[in-house]
Image (tube, rainbow, N blue to C red; front, top):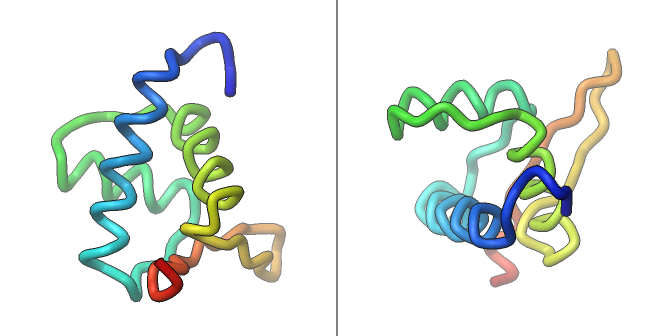
Length: 83
């Protein structure tokens, strides 16, 4: 991860995102879109670098996959049907 975030912070955000993905298995969005929706839904602002670290972890664990889009954007797509 990164020195800026504790393992507990990363683990908690990852847990919350996994719960969200289980409930919304068709959700897919960019890093910016996920950060915006997270803030609107939870009332909590999450730093994009922290969210990026968690999304990379979830990719490594097989919870989401990255889809490179035209223009350089990356779309994060859930893989919860495999869980």
